[in-house]
Image (cartoon, rainbow over all chains, first blue to last red; front, side, top):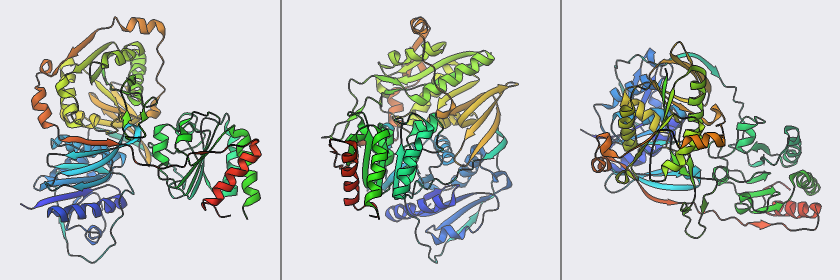
Length: 318
Length: 263
């Protein structure tokens, strides 16, 4: 039986991204690369072949019309059972992570969550790098026993350019189990795109702001810079002044310029802004961690420094 | 009576932890261990279910010699009893083995209706134990819960997914994992802290659960090879000036000189 690498995500774009990494690994260990597709009314499975798969394993069933971890797990296990599974890569969405953990338990396998880098060693063991300790450190790990399972966050790898390739489409007939968890209602989130992931300049608010109305100081600064406005976790999660926050549990950002105002700089926040080119901080606490991870800092009151900075930039720009 | 088992882990206090700048290693020695934040909220959720519907809460933790001290907070918050699995032979095992140990412990406690845990612990960030335990116990899982209640003996919950809130219902027993947004964990009163020490606590090693630590270690698949903070070079220039205007001016110059804004 031929060794197999399988890539899966219920999010097609993410599925194609991890497929490109799956291609690299398959070539290294001489394995067949399969894309696993679960759902109902699946369109264009050939797209996965054009993006690198040798074979698309398709389970198309009405019972898979909406994601439920029980039925998806059952379908995935059925699709995998006749393969010599070496590596299983799953997109690390919330759904993907719960599916991966449950599939791993059923296969009595280890799993590395949210790998930001993966590779295989000479022995065919899967190597993964992932963030731990609140996102402050990178943990290099090895999966010693096959099947090796890892989940991979969105935008970690780039999807391959499509090319005309030969590949097989295998449509599998699988009996889907009834699910015990009943979905009563799905309320779509009107998640207006914050634009934070792609922004080239971001100004950001932390607990130093005493009142929601004071955020206008930041908006004025943002306007001069053509920046997006973000915040640290407490401003969004605890106070609800904004929808989304920057940090390891929220948005990871990579702007050219990040200006942190009244943000203390917890390790979770630091992990989210690590890829910024230049970090500027304004915080009245001299010992605040944010100053340790900044290129330029002013130790001072945001209520006086931000308006002064807005004016200073206004005088110098254009 | 609803019996709830809450899974808790004591971890190094991440607000106190620093990275050694020369070795880029996290400094964890001598730092107080606390219950992981999301786990504490899982316990809070259990306490609120009990306050409304009655019931009994057992706190369960797989840990070390230091776990008991950290877990007193769980008893002070409102857990009725505490079970600790402490076996040096199990130090450093992966989520696969951890879930097997927890399965054995949960079965030994027995009689449960709901098992509640956090969606992840903040040290390992692995998000695996809830779903794995559900699989091993053959139970349904309801993950990423931000709101829940019991109705006619069923659990009704709101799940917080990326693109939607999903309202679900499940018959018990079930495994539930909660997100941080579900609640704010209470701070126990001094009186309850005093009482906590008198609540029943049991400590088990692997053999007390009918398991072999040696065999389990051999089953552990994921091994940590190296832990290191990524190399980040920052200039760390603190702008000094006599007035706010002068400081702001210097900062504006610095930003423009970096070429990161259109001047």
